[in-house]
Length: 358
Image (cartoon, rainbow, N blue to C red; front, side, top):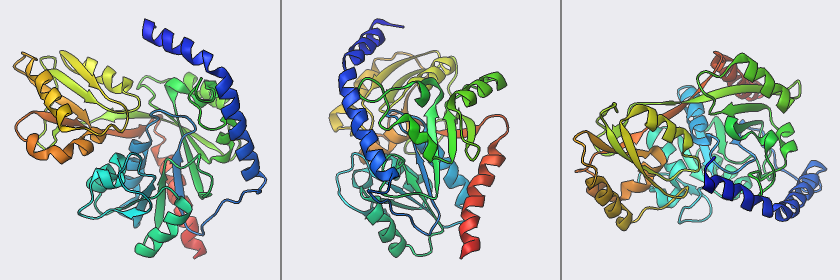
């Protein structure tokens, strides 16, 4: 453990009293919802919620994309997100003129990669869902992105994601910890996915974590990892494979860059990194700084590597990106222990249950 991480941990311990206050507020709010003093709205329509009860990257976007690949060819699928860091307010439905500033980086990523999917954003999901169904009445299923802690809407199927390296069972309330909701909130979910597991994750580890989570009989626990694809150029889409001869500049503005850093370290000769905060909105000055930093790398085989989220936020400078080797690193979720079929069955069975009722 390096000095900065020790310092950060020590500092967060000092914030423990604030966490107690925050935790009390969350527990009171949950009590009001659990006892129906505050009402949640439930729709007679298949709504799948993907979320977590902690801050930081747990792999929500790759999981949403997994569901889109699973469902898009069989159902008219829509996603509804808050649209974090967008410059608009209220309900917005994506179209061919939409940018990341209109709907946020992650929804824009879905919109670009899956043009047949309806993509909408709205802070008030209880208002946005009826509006989406009015605009797209042919919709068969809605995926709520990052909505587990927002209890105004009660989804028909709740999927909780928790990072293997930061399990919710071992965490504490903000700001001393990373929990933004009570640990007991996992009991409201139907599926729990432990994300970002390594390829060598063992059956013994699986059993230990399931025991630690202590799921109810009706709950299903899965384990997933992240698979990295071949980088493609942000403009031309041409691919380039990294090798042990490649030196790269990693430009990264995501919540948890650690898995990507480890992958890059194992895949290339060396790398330099420029880190930005999650959902960072790049400026032209940032792009100039990236160019200058890249020019100082003397290797013949060199490239700039960015995440898909960062690519969406950089596309407003597309005319400035044609002459430099800026490559996007795609990622996707996969399930360990050959359990993808069981997960897929649960999702499709949920949707078909509504089809049968109608």
